[in-house]
Image (cartoon, rainbow, N blue to C red):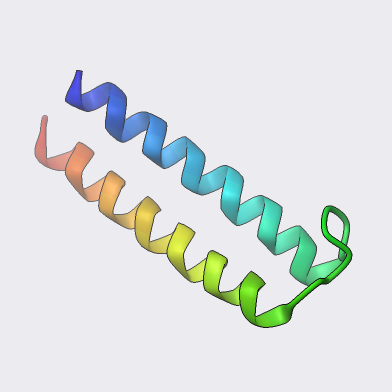
Length: 60
């Protein structure tokens, strides 16, 4: 079960990174509402992805 949670968190972080990266670059989903919000979510999704990847590596 912990491996599944790490994989789910990793996939969610990738989806959030793509979503807010597209908004920052092209303004597709949210119409470039706020650049600070996009950068904050990009940083947070990167941290979530790194933490879930490192947790997944330790479980093997």
